[in-house]
Image: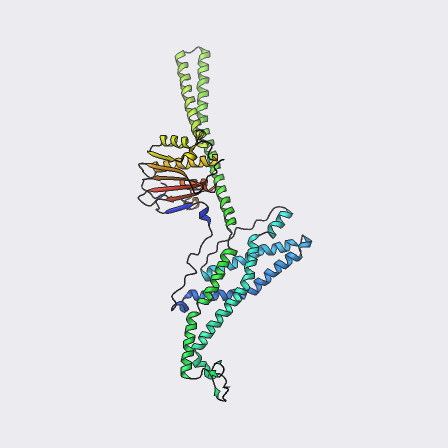
Length: 463
């Protein structure tokens, strides 16, 4: 078809689910390598930075909430609270950067803030900014989490290193008197139990070594919680992703519609209009000949030429009308697809569910999308894939309408985004058309074929 990159591609809402980390931040090295692994120290560094930011972030969150509530009676003062709520997005950006740098956790950006027009809408959009409120909640939760995580991790790390090196620095501790009156120099771990003998020094160092290898899992645990909070509170919600995705698909649909209108205008101007002008000139010339009493055979020839040009213009107008809305769809999707198969240069096998083939069973927009998708895919199979046949299946599947087009061509089809290729390919245009009605387009096309394109659409079957 349009590209020779073998892969499985998907276009549609499922393509806009929140981004996942490039490298799994939950992955941890083997137990014996953990204290020496760079990721363990990066997680500990995250807790360091988080605990330094925590008091300031908590203060900002408290001030934002208190000012918003306290200034509610002034109405105008609510703009101060709204500004602070929207400003929490800056803190969210900082925390997302920390999660990416220290944890390898790629948290996607939230959609940009859009202030409503007018006084009340502007105020409402600021006070109701969900991304700002979720950032404030994250700052509240991160205060105890970062403090407890940092203190626990540091305590275990210091204790482990202290136990391992006790034999070096323990001799400089002041002497302490035990209950039996004896004096000892070393760490005291219990009543009258001092680490001041070689055996106890060795045992204490062993405990320190165990703690040192256990220590990496403590920052790992706390940063896992922080990473989950970052994904859920600092990233975009499914609703916001859906809105942004639909806005993008609607923009693509508008661009397609505009391009189609320009193409129709160009075809009318360069084709049909030119033919009709020629017909008018030929009829005018025939009229002049009739008025001057010229040979009737010459007049008949001019009229015949004008008649043929008129029929050609009618054919072009029908083709243009078919590109806007195929008239055959008025008889039902089943008839339209059978007609399409009959006109195809390739043998096409149509398998259409009888429940969706009848006229009026589906919404007109869905019927039109199914027709144009099948038409484009059959054309691609003949033009690009060098296929010898195409199989088309249209059926209900899990409450949706599923269209599957399979050809035995050479494969290598891919949905190429317009921004990467510089032009809009046929499959990318289909993906945007399908996506505009909340559908999904999947392409499986390994090198050598076969190519299977599956279009899933909301059925919208009329009662």
